[in-house]
Image (tube, rainbow, N blue to C red; front, side, top):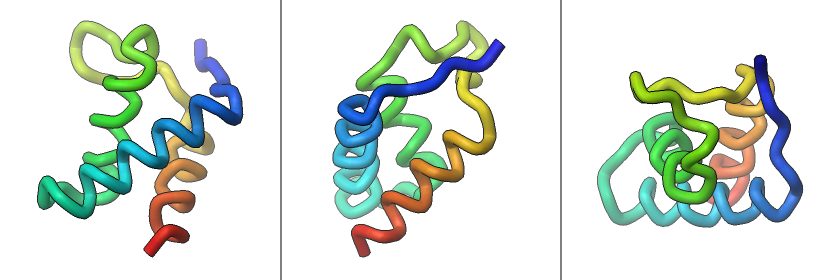
Length: 68
């Protein structure tokens, strides 16, 4: 089952992901995953995967790319 994120969650995740991308030498995808785990830890499974659809992950990645 996949869950959606609110606009404020997407904004927070995008902000954290951009910081991680710029200052932690992570790729965009890894930055988004780390940001989701920081902002919404309930969306992460115990094995480290996320409870988000690919469409939502791609949208978050595109938001970070647009900030460059």
